[in-house]
Image (tube, rainbow, N blue to C red; front, side, top):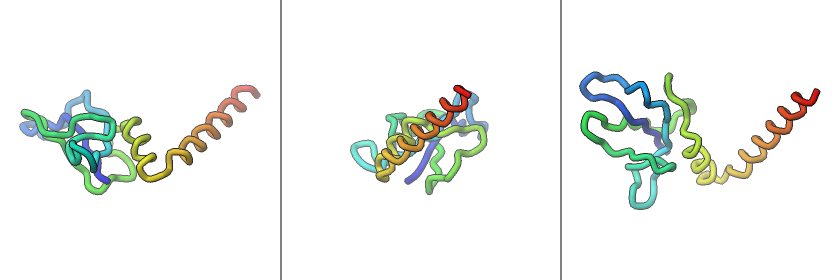
Length: 101
């Protein structure tokens, strides 16, 4: 798997401030290698080529966060969606118990 983010300005070499999400690259279908699993465009546009990270990093670069939708889709692709749902439910139950005490 690969990742990418948008908003890199080729002229200045800096990322635009509004860019915060690191997307997981779609590797199948019509937009393989050109779109995030969430549907975010990953193709280049004027003054804003995508920055591709290969392989998928274990944590996003400084200043970025994971695209929540892409992470959910990626979990399903690797067969871990149910496990992630169990972890989230357990954490939610733990948080509810702390609030009640």
